[in-house]
Amino acid sequence: MNLQYSAKADQADITKLEKNKMKTEVYLNINQKGFEKFKKEAIEKDKDSMGDDYEDGALYDEMIISDPEFEFDQSTGQLVIYGGLFKEGTEMAFLDVKTEVSLDLALEIVNYYMKKLGKLKTVLEATK
Image 1 (tube, helix red, strand yellow):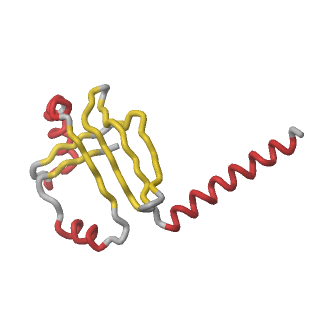
Image 2 (cartoon, one colour):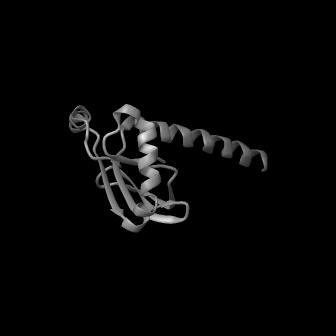
Image 3 (spheres, helix red, strand yellow):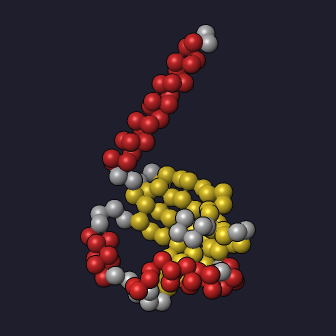
């Protein structure tokens, strides 16, 4: 997982997001001590990755969500994913993402599990 912070946002990207009908909310509670621990490394990684386009950022990569929780809020139609964000055993933040699920994605998921259940049904019938 890459988490990149940049002091300046590209206005075209912001406009594109505002026009997007699918809304995603992100709640990020940052652990300052964790981010400070890796700050020097993160700034160097951002400089390396951005090259001449580097302005004022820090690239925190190779983080994991430890024991993520997944929920589906039927009242809002949102998928909710949350958990602690860690890098090399250090707590970096608590992350909570809420995003709407498109009909196309929902159908993909249903089709995937229908195939899995079909295989399970075949196995169970063979063991009768």
